Image 1 (cartoon, chains in turn brown, red):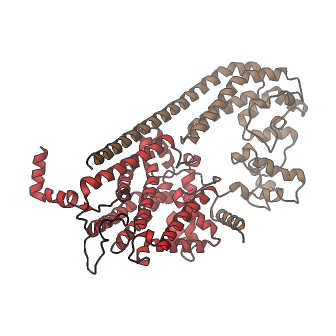
Image 2: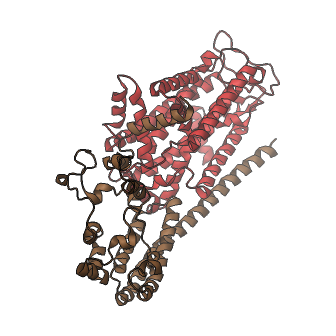
Image 3: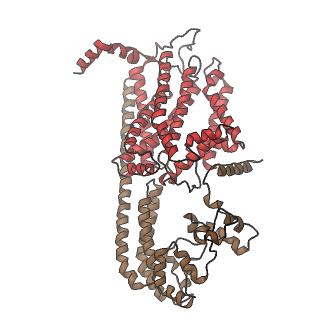
Length: 266
Length: 364
């Protein structure tokens, strides 16, 4: 057996001995969807999902589609809550099981009302896609996408109103990630930003320019407060660096004094 | 006032004689070098760990629900808690490095040879206790990194036939790493290991003082001291006084040790704590690339290279036994490694393999 093969076997052995390792890989849905017996478009689903924001956050097949991911026989059984692929008009309810606030705003919006009345208005996957779903941003509002159904003017006004808040969120997210990499526990701060961002996202879905303008100041104040906490941590890290540098210099000076002492005494 | 205290002690314990026989009149070899100070630096490192560990104990909560949060509170809310915690975390790595360097220099200088075999054995056990300190302390912050690294390490004994599962279960206090494991590791870390290390240190120091400091085989002016058939203390009448000559050098090295520690805290604060060290432990979510700390990487990589896990553990146990009892294997009288090409080649091979396995383990 050559070295790469040995390493592979060892990696597999480690997988077996480590409980909980690769939890999402134990989902039986993937056994079929990854195999050649599946139709091409269905076989692409696991790969798209692995690149998605859902995968990054540990959201697996059964979290949306129900069923039993641990039992191949019952994986698609309605008795275990399997719902499969939702109908076009059922998609908002399907995603809204988790994205509750967004569902409410969407249903009250022009988009939601259009879907309800005609059954053909835009739903979640029209803008976000399905399995390859990515972290949302206002870049999702663009001429190419919006022009599929209507002119871009109104969407452009909404995007401009959202721009400042979105820029602040992006900057803060980057700053919090940098703090995390610098060894700071940022979960609380991250959660605060996430909750503000989630609230802001629900506002997107109202597609109501006046409401967005009315609430923007509130969001900006909330983000300013998070930025204040973020800056306090940055200042604290700077102080720590300076203080440890000072202690290092004191130790080096003490070592230097000792060197001089035993040199002068021969 | 000082004179009065000295006189008072002189009458009662004969202070002047202690100072003369143990410090100013106690002579170390004339060709002694800075590598001989590493034992004292390791001792200073241990005391630094005890002092900072004591401070952490005041605020740390050894419970799986609160451990991670309490460490974060130490880092962000307790005044200067970050300094003590960083000193403890960085210090543990530097202490291992110092002990390893000490063992390497002792090997290179041939200081383990007769009559110092027991001094070496006590030192080797102290190295293992130091590594166990690191292993048990690693779990205590209850982060993703500590949780999964401990899961991997505690699963290794499971490969031993018959008793393997029992050993792994005893270490973990159950099927998997849990709050019970945290309690065990905490008790081992703060009570058992310090007592064991102090006990071994007592034996080690007693042997060093009883037998006398060995002289380096390089740059000798007098003929080499040779042990006889009965016990004899190795003294160095033409050498330097322990105090102030040697103590000054020891203190200088201790200050350099702390300078290195503060350098890492100031400029490389995340050197020993990757991202996963800042994320609370989650038994249901395995991080992608969990690696042991640098001092365990050679063992980890060696275990990966040997396809049979039991064989891997067996080989490592054999290597550990060879290391502990090396003075009883290399019994030739010549202590100058430069005059023994085969021993020099073996020494170089061990050091180079260690470095290669460490780098390989890190990037594999």
